[in-house]
Image (tube, rainbow over all chains, first blue to last red; front, side, top):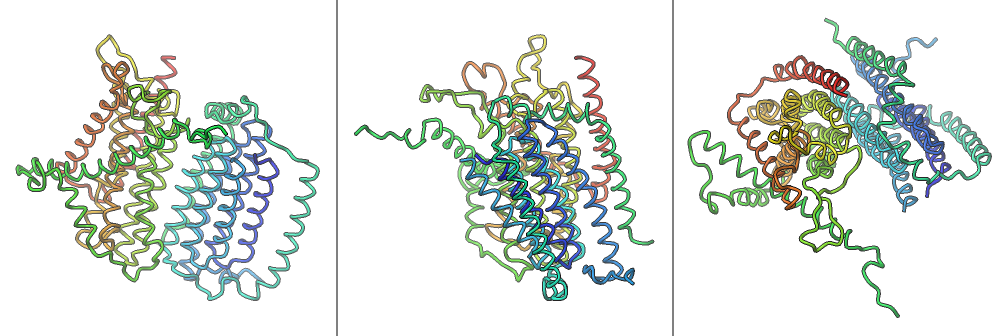
Length: 100
Length: 171
Length: 351
């Protein structure tokens, strides 16, 4: 039987993979995908702790996290499309005009 | 048996996520993420949360990933632009920061779990049915969390309008 | 040393019975798609005042097998596509999701196979308490087969055809889900078996308590959205326009093409089967409990809906793409929402 510890460790591993993706990848779409990995890791934590405590609140929070992730992905991808129209590239290094 | 299923699903999720982060072709990243979401849905079923599992497939794998796929296809991204996945100027400081963060994360998780002790899930029959019933989730959503529910619907409307406005071609 | 029985390995009679049942369901679906090929051509022919296939076998019944043999012997073309792996996997995704959606559809009551089994066996692959959502989830995954087929063919026309087709599918998924939600509200459960058993009984001894009489608008919405989901009949613009240019499955040949077609027919069967369970009372009918013949009623109702599908295809002209999208968003979705609100009001008012 997997215990709560198993799920927490899995969630930690997934979260670090997502964070590594956000830091190290140079492609806007892959960065957004890594953010989705992080959100999923957090969802696993919520549901497993909810199961541990025997309440349904974990799943409710997960429901809201999924909705917010959908909204954020939609707006993020719209921004990516708009940015791509300007510079024809998806690398974040091309959009550094606000750096001093 | 359940432990075996857990390791299978967790292994698929971790390997697919590693593939997402390290793949050069954006289309492959999206497909591998869908595989990872499928594995996570399996994990939710193991956690006696079938509604969350199905919602994950419908919302994440069925809607959000289709959105990503559309954008990847519209922008015609066959292969990534620069030749190396991670350029060297980013890799060395990134690796240093990454190693530091991983060590910190490992220490924190280990400390936290040691405080926790081994926490098995309760196996009383009441525990399972009390959280896997969709009626309970619906009741909680519409009574205790009504405000958050309504605000979320406004949030979706706002993001829909925002996405259309931002991605529109200038007339 | 005592004899080792099969039961010691965990292989019980129930397990064998269920495996056989799953095998039977799978084969029945494949045979139904073959039967649909024949029925489509026959019905099309009679609507067009001619006879249709009548050479291969009695009344042309072996025609689908002739078609499949022809397809199997064709060369499997593999263009220098953008992505060989995705090109190969797209028809597999389409077909796999088509079969998977049928796993939660019950097609009969309990049966003991004339006393062969110790315990009564329910006629279904599995019974989950969120069955309706599983069907919806699998329908969402079916979009990927088409999207990947369009993308991996490495041709602008295939890509546009795939994009249009998947945009159509996700637009009509909303009305599909709302029609499902209305029935769930009436039945009070998401498990298809419970939805069917809630439709047992008669009003005034004559009219069966099927949900189609309580929700005629919902039935119309569900069937329309289902037809649009499967890219059939008046909503098959992405398939037909591209007959002049190219299509999302234009680069596919032989078995991959056959897989796409089989996936389309099995999707039709699934939509009809779910509509039967939700609206037409599933396997219920006169004497269905006493003699265990519920599955015959189920098959008859599904065949009726499939005939309706084929009839619509050869009678109605197809929608243009912008007309199709306008209909889906401006007419069908508001109707589905109004249906949901009216059903909710009705359920609260009648207790």
